[in-house]
Image 1 (tube, rainbow, N blue to C red):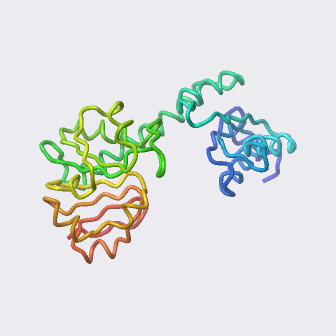
Image 2 (cartoon, one colour; image 1 turned 90 degrees about the vertical axis):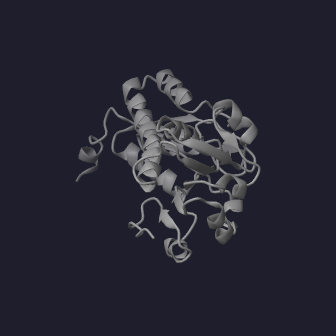
Length: 251
């Protein structure tokens, strides 16, 4: 395929790339631009005093592509709403951006269905323990945290939800007031029918899994961050579900 034909594949569409400082993110941004998309580079990182997003945008424009940068501070970043505003500011077709964001939200809601399936197809009257609430580890930032649509979905399915996060529970109470908050992961797991790992805090990698299993009513774990090895969880007697791996047989 010639470069001219290749550029027509995504002509008139928008590609939103977050975390362009990593090699994969930068490569994705350049590839989308080469295929004719207008790229929104979403990154707050700085290299040698220059925002990485600006460096990527300059590289795309030098190659004849179209790109804009969004480098807002995380404390001010409003996630989906800000991306929509960025699109409007640069004459991007808003419906495309909204469609992308809608897909992302639906994917997050699908996590609740994954938990429901792991629990036998119904969560009504069951207790779900959620470990990790923040957008990422080592922060208390709850904006655009995947735990929010997940927990809302679990509540909608009739589950009782309790949660633990090493740093984000105070902020989470504003977003998710209708759940129980626990001071440690073992208390969170006590009596739970299923446990869900949402944020890959290093503390969760060091859990005493035998103790965790002993606290739970049913040893069902849904690991949305692939923190554990399936074979290890199976050996300990857990029914274990992760993401993007071959299906682990249930115990």
